[in-house]
Length: 627
Figure 1 (cartoon, rainbow, N blue to C red):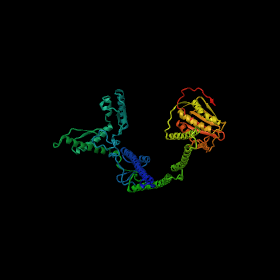
Figure 2 (figure 1 turned 120 degrees about the horizontal axis):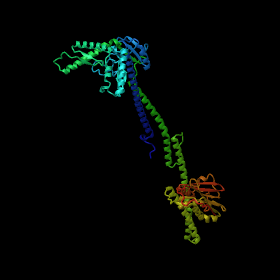
Figure 3 (figure 1 turned 30 degrees about the vertical axis):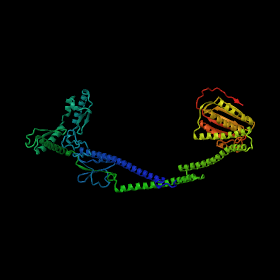
Figure 4 (figure 1 turned 45 degrees about the horizontal axis):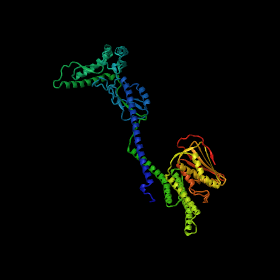
């Protein structure tokens, strides 16, 4: 067996590889999580920034659409800048300042955020600005809040509100349609019916037509717009059109059409020209009513551009450096931990090898309180137990040899004497030889029982056993021996206890206890066999009034070949296997055995047996005493 572990199989190298793998995985996972989290945060921040920019643009654009100039825009810009935490500045096309929420924050950036023009809305910042039914009229970039001459006076608004209220009431009562009135930018009310298309309903048609009738203000503004549009078309030699309030148009009868092109091509070209004229005329009509175009700047309060995540070469170098540092620290701590772990393992390996080579005193030094220290303690305890077991084994071999040698030597000696004619083979000699052979057979039988118990091959034939009968049989079997030495045997039972047990093996265990008690009880003494039920089962006790056992010897009474009385006389010595067999038989029944003793007063051995089956004979009291 090699004493050195190859490097490729060493625990230290495996720990190092595992630590590197964990470190790399941790760094990769952390980097991935950081990138994902940072990306999500950046996207959220960018989304909020876009929302704030759109809000700022909408607020400034609304001011431009409803005011003919920028006077007083500071009152709208400053609260908004405080609310969103940004710096808002407006300048003219030439760079002249119009408004600034933080005038002392430094120069403005060279690139503007947007151009604010109510007649040319930035559709990227203000999506959905195309008015319904506008077609390709060229008016999609005009802010719908730009009303100009179409703004209705109070009296016209009130009249339209009355018509709208009557139409709504009619729709609710006659058509069961849930309708509401909503004011448009010009003050003209319109009827909204969520989930219902009024175009498909003829209910209250006259009231709705009255509501759609132009007012004097709208007629005047439309007349001005139509004049502008038709003047533009006349310059292009196109027929006149009639523009409506929704900025759609209807053509007037055309004088003639070019012959060289198809009618479809002419219509398409005319539509594009009309759309351009309508858009140009609307802007020309609304120009006096809106603020002039201005340049918008949106920055942070310090005038610096917003920070973004930039994985520049410098940032990449920092990430690699930090990852490398983490990896080096991990490897360093792993090496230290590995050395601290493998050093006691090497010591344990060396001690185990010395123990294998026959050094029973091999021990390891225990330091610390961790798992390795616990392993060292267990190893030392195992070594001590192994040394004790080795001593017991040697003593047991010696005892077995002695126990078997004595009767065999006696038998051989007498047989040689008979063969040499020194002794006559009479009845007395044969009886002595038979006694020696019986002792030898008992030793062999006891050793066989212990071997079967150790191997788990001790078979039990269980049946319902009534302890009153069994204990009486044991007492009768040992009464003759007890009478010879002047010892009294008594049996006491309570409530006729029963157990599920092998009667032969249980009788053997109790018999060994009784034989041991009789052997160690002086003449005139008493051995009492008792049994009774408990909460956990049944107890069987054998108590004597003999010499007793000292406290230091009591834990070893069930060891094999152990005797408190070292003499090997037939009266007190015994083989030293009886109590060991008692313990094995009791454990085979699922019970335990214990001993208590007081020197010079006697000892008590107790079997604790579990009750496995219910009583099938009743619980009649058969307690009694046999002397």
